[in-house]
Length: 201
Ligand code: ADP
Image 1: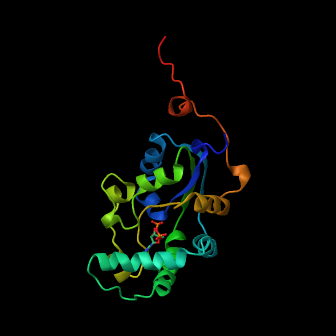
Image 2: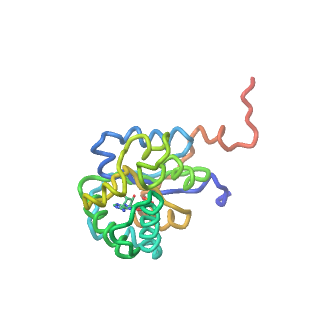
Image 3: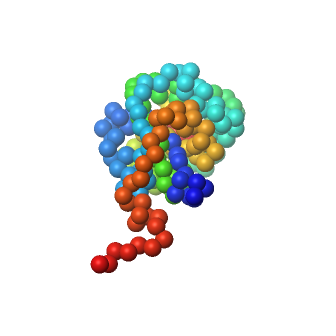
């Protein structure tokens, strides 16, 4: 039963701009209304060191993020000002540390079937300019790689969401201790997951 997809967990963070834009309720309701269960939540102002360690939990993050960024420029026919993946991600991480420490962040763990993929889908892709309408980043933010890079700041995209199940496990361990995670049954789990649904009298 523990391996059932309904037990998957993911980490989502409402970044400081999400809080300053008064979007806490809106963001949480999108994860909640699809059927995910909130199993942990807290508000903190992280330190720069905590954020540096957070983005280095995945040893591939530096290279992947730099490459993704250069490709996003190329796809729009623009030459990247740095063009070196590691230099690009070093720049991104320095800006991220300023972004995340500029105010409170809300950290949440959401549990439910395919939680990682579902939360990523509802969140949208990294660059709000290219995020689909209907996603959090697509509906509530208008930032772009180019504007953020020209202004030498982080892309403001309201939320962070884990990218894979392994990443989620590591990220949850970074933000929460085991005793902060609540195990409980939500009444709607019956209609979401029970094999037989007997709604008739
Ligand atoms: P995601 O958050 O979608 O998983 P990444 O892991 O690639 O995206 O990047 C982490 C965060 O770094 C992004 O959410 C965004 O806030 C910021 N970021 C990414 N690329 C850039 C960039 N080129 N310039 C400024 N900030 C960036």
